[in-house]
Image 1: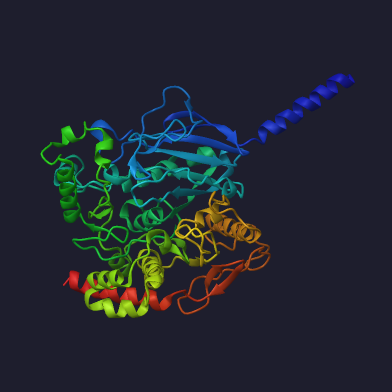
Image 2: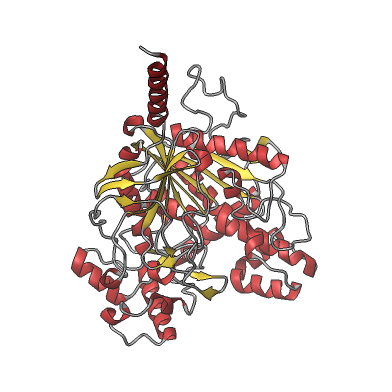
Length: 538
């Protein structure tokens, strides 16, 4: 064979090897053929429909199966995020970040070079108080590169995702047999996970190794999904960052803390339409009104409700009875969660709000969260929000599951000092709400560039989280040298959570095990909610 032909053969062979090693960019789903692209060395599929557009007659209805593709579906650009208010106003978005009622799409990042790779799968659920947010806030490329398929999903929010009305409940019962309304965003999430379960094998993922993960409202969603009978068998593990839905289900819910009853959600929906001047219109007419109209009042009361179908009741009581999906958990909170939601005030204002909120419990809460001067009020308010919205539901969750379940649990506490987003000229005492995403995904926010110590924390957390998705254990990447996960580990060993031992991993310029942080405060909230339940359910 001539030298020229030999060289040509080598070039062709080498090119074939390179092509064979490229991540998947063309595959099939139940809807047909789909084509993505390579970005950051990963097979990337953007804007993949997991349900039909929830518009027109499908507004305020459970998501419907997506329609077959017309030809090869081009999944090469991010589609619209759910319609929402932005920076206090209503916006239709921009060409770069469109916003639309037609929003039920997901994004997939895969390192797999073949369909039978059977890689573990992470499904990311974004936060935003069930009012705003987007699925591509944090691309999971750094996680995907560790050998997993990363999926981010979009779901309906605000009034478009959580408006409940008696008429909608009656319609649902007639059409589906389920007397429910207002949990459309939760049903979207469930439909997205079902789609992933059915189709992810064609992207190199293993449908039996799905982990759901969410932050803030996404974390609350994860807790709801873990307790919903509709998700049985859909995932094998769960990660919750700063979330949980374990507050009592009363006729008045505190937005941001827990669910209300379906009856009360329906009344809130009626009151909301009255504010908009739409209370006399029929459902068929409400479905013709531009979605932006339903954002004029902010839709702040639109939140998941205990409808007896998606959310079957008070989750605290459900967990006491063992009525939940018993899976391995990785859960944590940040040290300065409440700063984002709290503002300075006077001592007189603080005294008044504490008395109004806690009534006979006010003396105990004021003693636990003291404020002697106006300067103390911000910290007191911040710490109250940290415990009530994030720390207490997280520890209520894990302590209940340890009593009635078998799944293993790991707890973290992120306490890495960051720029203070409330008082820009002050040094933060710890990590603000949502900043955990920057560390876990390895993508610093523009307002908090990473230091060398920050990058060290980020690399540890990314690896721990990726390991958990791979094996259900943050210590184990699936490549142990023997049966002891502590052997050969490149990270400090992270023990299973135990309430009375130093098993919480604190990230603070390194990683060290501590006992439960702020336990006295969390225990006070436990007593308070126990008393509230006794009065609500007597």
